[in-house]
Length: 235
Image 1: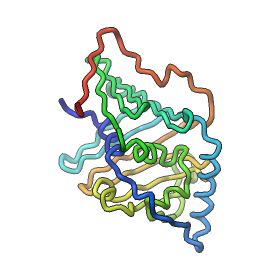
Image 2: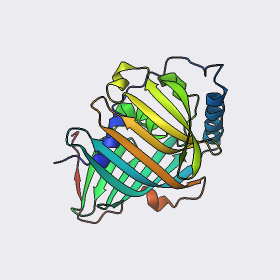
Image 3: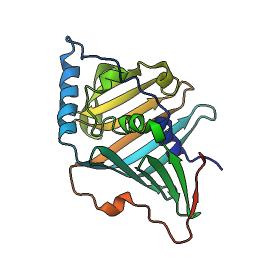
């Protein structure tokens, strides 16, 4: 069965062993970077929920094609854990849910749920999942060399642009580097670009971002039927 690009993007995170044991601090000379990281820390301290509209563009270098998906994404903190739901509405209806150490992808068209277990990689998965959405700015310095590369207007926001290079070679084998565009006022990401060594990349754009608003519990439940088939590629 062909792996869905939406789930492939998420599952890449589950395979990343983060090098979190390293200690780091923001470059003393880079006041702009420090201000962005501090705002992200402040947002993370009060984080409960985030929801946003998204456009995901997955570029494949081999065939020189871009696959575009649109919809809404939701995050919420449940105790010490993070839950994520993505309602993909275009070009085909899909629903992606992450909770209880599992990524579940529901395809209503064929009435099937594909389940991927993150297992021992859950913490690493969550760390990437909240990159720019509820994660602490200074925590990124444990796993990445972070550079402030200026500002750029994204969706009407004068965003701070950060370039993240993995410190761990194992992570770099999956993502050569990551660009984040952070809204300096709210400390959240309005755009992300993740580059794979192959030349493929994922460009994610976020708009209509709402922070700490009530999200119904039903958003974090799959809307399956009594005949839905459950499959698990990882056994």
